[in-house]
Length: 390
Image (cartoon, rainbow, N blue to C red; front, side, top):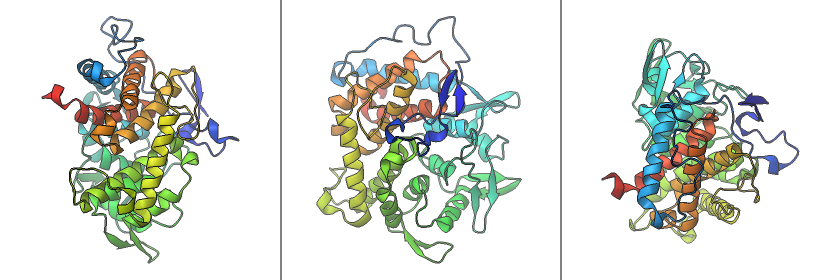
């Protein structure tokens, strides 16, 4: 366990060592993202909003909520400037997930795009890439507070970062030699094996490959994206990283791509269960049942259960509620169509998440909670605040 701002936290949401699954969500906490670098002489970064409850219901305060989202996103991106001397790749890559190439990093006396710095052979603790037999792989440092904690975590987050992810042909320099993101993907395809945690691998497969792609892994077996989907859907959500939110996000990414590629009726985002089969149907069942549990376990203030998809529960710890609400909200925005995203229970969650970020604006906040919440709000703003952004 590690201490962040005086709180004891579990590394990378590892619940398997806990005697009870309900203790599971405990945050994906590593090193904190620090207090804001600029306070503008105020006690709070959002003095007019911090600690206040905006009117519940998106229809009642659409413009106000969208403006507040703009504020917390700008604050998370720019006011909490990460520094290569202090923070590791785990923290920085989570920032890149939220904001893509716009996420800044202080290094070597200057500030520039964190993504560009890393992809151009920048030095950062935990950013450990090696040449593999068919491409590149990132070293897994399970339990690390700075390095990649799961297979293909860097690749998965690069594929999903910001609003669109980064292209497969994006240049990548390692030890002075030139590669592309595709070299990370080909190595991931070669390394896949039964029983593997393939959550982040699936994010990348769904982003970069047609859903019907087949390939041979190193062991000679034939794989498809659907086979990976079936493997992930069969895994236990409640014992998965961060209460299962990451595994669900991977399934959502893959199923969205499959539906988009095979849809004949483009007016509806999702097919009915009778139109899906095999691994795709299993993924749909897992996603929908998990989201329904999140809705049933939602707290009166709009936050989601600190026990994620397992059972209802709340806490006096705002950081715990920020973590679970942010992780679950990111999944909701990735999966729900515009009509469902506009339902009151989702809008209450959006408002509560913004309020948590306002309330903690001048505090040291754990990076995983901060940036998953930010990514979810970024995606939400793009879809639900379009009229305000035009």
